[in-house]
Length: 209
Image (cartoon, rainbow, N blue to C red; front, side):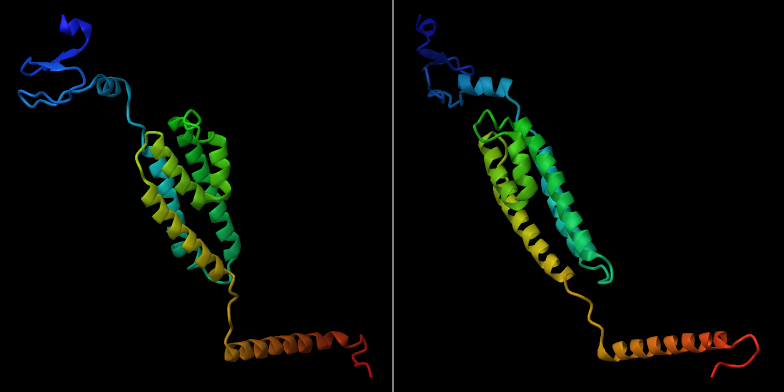
């Protein structure tokens, strides 16, 4: 009768009768699972961390490419253009991944914006947006990667600022090399002028006065 009224529970291990809401059997010590926990374990699946992990990997690879690629290139190459292209490609790719992950996490239902807003925020403010989104997705049921995102964003931003300053420096030619280059240029011009002198001879074989 008591079980029919829903005020008592029965331990599945020792079959002892327990009050409703008791999470531990007083007789055998068995931990009981509540109805909410049963429904959650049966119907809910933990969100995938693959997309957000891919976004973090893209940011790390971008920082590595700045150091091993753009920064180590010859100053004679268009390093500024390559740096801008790398940053733009990184922001666009990470923004697409974040927008896709925001759709899977259903952030709009939790009143944390819509995916296309996260796309724009990541596209223009990638380091700040990836930190904020990591905290938001943790509140939407995902794993908390806020500290990792913060560390990664700071490393990427510091790398971008340093490399951006480095690629703007023009190559410095030593004075001795500059003088040798000018001397060689002057000799080349003199040889070309002397080679053009015979063309000034008239058809009768006499040089003009």
